[in-house]
Length: 521
Image 1 (cartoon, rainbow, N blue to C red):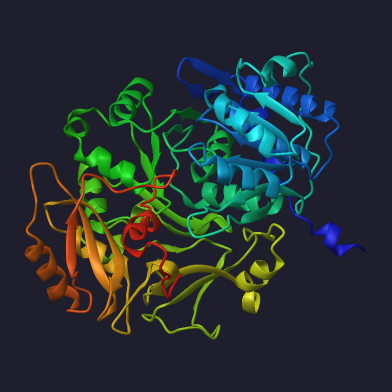
Image 2 (cartoon, helix red, strand yellow):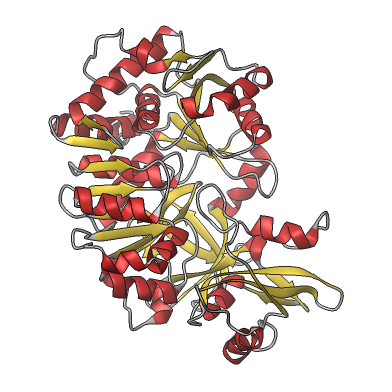
C-alpha cells in the first residue's frame, strides 16, 4: 500500500473549481463598471488555460504579471494554480531594476502587463531574455491583448492538473534589505491558507468583500475564501477614503480589508463618522503592526467587528489570528496582541540557540505546519538557515502570555541596540500612539557616537495638533524608562510606505545611515 498516495491532501485548484461551480449565477467580482458572475469567471479561466497551453508551456513554467488591481490578474493566477505553473505577481510600483531581477531569477517565460504599465513592459523587454511571450490585459501598442486571443477558445469545464506539492506560486519578498527572495509556495500551502482563513476569520454569510489593497500580494488571499462562501469580491484600483466609503454605501459592503495605514486614514476622515456603515460585519486587517490605541478607536467608530491576522510570505497569512471576540476595547494590552496560533499550526518562540523561551520572554517566532513554504527559490543556503532546527524561522521577535496570546515586539532587523540594550520600536510606537496629538509614528535607530544607536521618533501629528517633543519623550520615559525614551523627535506630513502599505523603515533609516551598516541588519 502506498501510504503517501493514500494520505495525500487536496489542492487549491480543486477548491477554486468547487467554489465556481457552486454559485454559477451569483456575482463573483466587481471592478469599476465591470461585473463577472461565477460562470463568467470560470469561462475566463478556462480560456486563459487553453491559450497558455497553446503556447507550449509545461508544468513548472513561470508566468509573471505586473498589473493594477484587476480581476483579470487573478484569472491568470487561477489558471496557474490549476495547471501547475508558477505564478509571480510583481508590485506594480517597483523599480525596473527590481522587476528585471525577479523576472530573470524566476525564469519567466510569459509576461502579462496591465496596459497602464505598457511603458514599463517596453523598458523590461530587452532586460528579460527568458520571456518568450509578452501580453497585455488590454489593448496596448506593441503587445498582444491576452484576452482577445483567449476569446478564440471555447470555454470548457475546469480541471485541476496539479498535486499538493506542485509549486504554483513564487512570492518574492521585498528588496529593501537586499536581494529579493523567491518564496516557493505549493498547492498544499495555499490550500491550507484558504482553509484556515475560512475556519478562523469572522465571515458573514455571502460576504460582499471590499479590497482596496493589492491583490497581487497578501490581500489576494481573501479571494478564494470569499468565493467559497458565495460572496462578491469588489476590487478597487487603489485606496482612497472617499471611494472606499462610497463603495461601502453603494454595494452594502459587509467585509472591508485594509492595512493599518488605510484604517488610520479612515479614522482621521470626518466623513467616516457621517457615513452609514451599518452593512459592515467584519473589518479584516494585518500586514504590519497596528497601534492598539487606534484599534480601540476603530472599535468605537465601526463597532466590535475587527479581525487581525499575522503571517508572512513564507507561512502565508496564517500564523496567528486575533478574532473579533478577542478585541477587548477595555484591554489595551490585548489589543497589542497578534492573537493565538491558528488551529493545526505549531508556533513556538526560540532563543538564538533554538531553545524554547518561557512565557513572557522574547524569542523568535518559529512555525511548523502545512502552510509552510517549500523553501527559497535557487537559494539553498538561505533555505537551510530559515529551516534551522526543523522550524521555519520568521525573523519576528515576540513573547507569549499565560493565555496563549502572542505579542510581536519587532522584526529582528528593526530592533535597536542602544548602549548595549535591546530596544523594540513597536513598544515605543504603541506608547506614543496613545497621545491624542499623534496620528502615526515610526521609531528607528540612528547612528550615535555615545550609544551606537539612538532612538528617534518620527511623528505624523493629527490635523491642527503638534505635541511638544518633551511631552512625547516624557511619556515614553515614564512608561518604559530612559533607554526607550527617544533622543530626538521629528515631525513629518506622512510616513513613507512600501507598495503594500507598510511603513518603510528602511527608507526612513537610509537618510541617517547612508552607506553605514547596522549590527542587527
